[in-house]
Image (cartoon, rainbow, N blue to C red; front, side, top):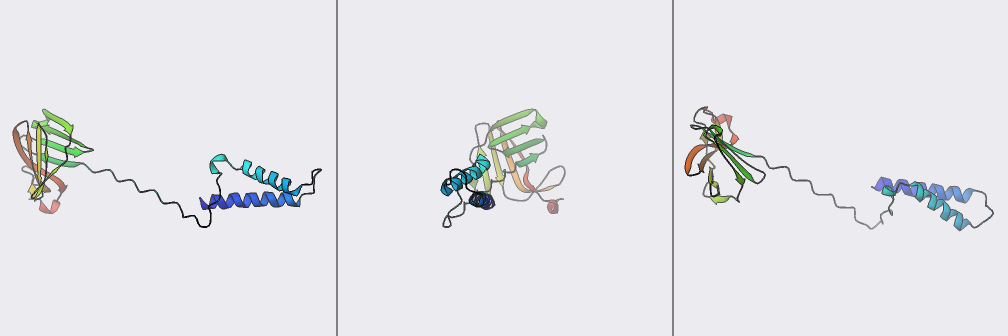
Length: 168
């Protein structure tokens, strides 16, 4: 921005200098020649780049805030029967009984629990406990124990960050 303003000032100064060094025309009014040269310099500057140079005491423009990174999906899973849960972008998507049951709904605000958080809706309650969990079939370690109650049936599983150091 500052470089563009300096470039415009230099271009206008050069145009005015050229106009003042030119031989006088029939109308020998130097002020009008300089004004014409300045108008020509401004006219040759693209409209989207025209602006007044910043005043010396003007504060520099504040930088725009960085956009927030998209929130990563929270994923939990369990076995027997297999189920998968995703919480992201303001939604909870649950697939139970190997995909036969599907519940998709807006995610309510989480409630704090003594060791985690809980999401409660009419059809689905998801309780996330911040404690070590190992998948029942694979033995893979995860950061959280997750309990899902879907349409009155309760299932246990694991979710959150994958912890290879906890694999059994």
